[in-house]
Image 1: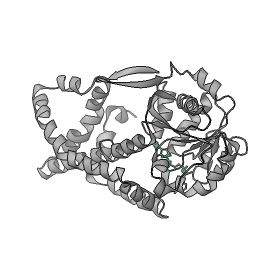
Image 2: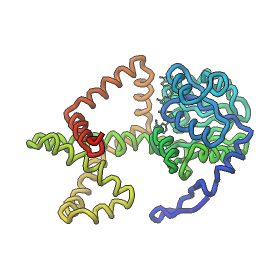
Image 3: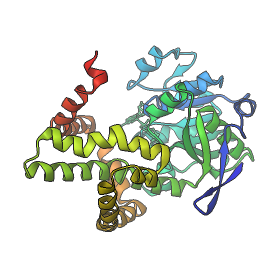
Image 4: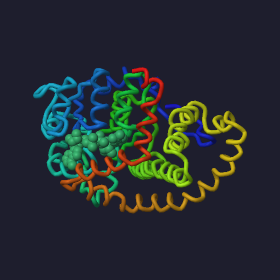
Length: 348
Ligand SMILES: NC(=O)c1ccc[n+]([C@@H]2O[C@H](COP(=O)([O-])OP(=O)(O)OC[C@H]3O[C@@H](n4cnc5c(N)ncnc54)[C@H](O)[C@@H]3O)[C@@H](O)[C@H]2O)c1
């Protein structure tokens, strides 16, 4: 474990150089890891572990059964119905959708016999136990590795030879081995580095982040700027380029590589002055919304919405309709046109 200075605050991180894949294999040599739920996250983690030489089986139902077969898992050998996989495993990675975890819990719980580890990639089910009823038995380890990125990226970054940063936490250590099991799985699924958290901190920050800057706020501020530009007579092409394309194709990569100050230092002085002046106004305007959001996360209001919506029988149909409305909006149709005009696409 290394102490790293995060802007004056020293934090512990564990890299794959300190906790090597070799060590991870040693820790997991007598374990069978079942990935229960071959969805976005389960798929990435299962494939990475398999490629890393970990004994890994998949538990899946109708949703993605065929997908698991197509990707090399063999029914009756490495692919089972969820409960059967959990029965055969010593570490159970519970990677159903969060609403699915609540629904399957009564069937899963009897499989959690003494000494096993129950693993999550989100603090959701444990932290909001009043709403999920997910209360594990006392004689098992309860652990978490939460990749800080989409499940897609867990696999794509692994194949590209990089990794994805993950947080980790031990909620319950019944065997005395909970932490080494956690770090071993964290390395085996391809984490770039691992930083400690708690189940509470993980879920509060994650729910805030995805509703906020990462997705909800991002789409919202883009729409607001696009609409204002359109209202004032700018063409869809101009409004989209000035709102989304320049960000995703140019600026965000520079921020990722060098930080915000570097990006500000390397744009025109006109842009620089304006951005510095307006940054504070936007921060102050949205701060109350972020406070409200964090409070709703903390008090479980957001969880109640997620569980009710995601367990409704018509959830997928309703979701498809909402996403279709986004896709066919003028702004994102303009986006499709702009993307199709990128030089690399025009050449095809
Ligand atoms: N998707 C991500 O990028 C991401 C990132 C970090 C952490 N996580 C966490 O990983 C876990 C898995 O998330 P995911 O996005 O991979 O899930 P998902 O929506 O892809 O679903 C995974 C599996 O859950 C089952 N499932 C889905 N809906 C169900 C329902 N209504 N009832 C019963 N079973 C159902 C299916 O077996 C499906 O294959 C969650 O705890 C999530 O919070 C996800």
